[in-house]
Structures are given as C-alpha cells and as structure tokens.
Amino acid sequence: MDGLSVAGIVIDQTGKIHGFNEAAQKMLGYRLIDVVSRNLSILMPSEYARVHTDYITTYLKTGQAKVIGVGRDVPVVRKDGTLMGAHLTVTEKRDGEKVFFVGILQPK
Image (tube, rainbow, N blue to C red; front, side, top):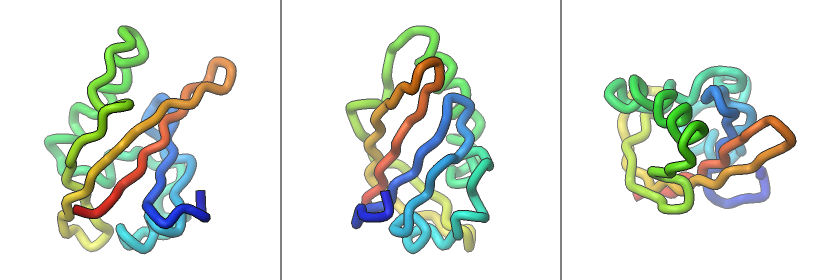
C-alpha cells in the first residue's frame, strides 16, 4: 500500500487498524505506530465513531453495504484535531474466516 499516492487504511471486522500507508500518515498526521491496533473511530468525528462498529456488524450479518463499493464524502479527524473532508471508497478482502476492509481516502 505504501506505493499508493492516496491514503490507504486497512481494518479488520472489529474496526481495528492493520495498515496505514505513508500517504495516510502525511494526510492525517499520524505515524503508523500511533494507529496500528487502534479502532478506526479515532479518525472520525464522534457522531460517526459511535455507529461505525454497528455498521460493520450489520454489514457482516446482512451483506447490505452502505459504503462498500459505493464511496461517499466523509469528515476525517487529523491528529491535531482538525477536520478535513475526504472522499472514501471501501473494498472488502476475505482471508478464510477473516474479513478486512481497505479504505482509500482522497482529500476534497
């Protein structure tokens, strides 16, 4: 993912961050060590963070996607606390029983 010129983030089915490329680090001000194994909600305003895990759980149970394969504009919280607008696209990757989601963020 580090070869991508856009911000890329990989999370698991619980929302835990597994990957955070160099473009994401530059865009959001976090280092990889700051975010790996933490919940993706640290990058979201509180009203989004509160429901994010529920969205994942609902998707895994029903297969009904709200963002996966569609994309949407979202607010993102940088490390310094400032908000920025970004366009988010998400794809799903399965590895046996494990489910991962790859998010690509492009600044608005």
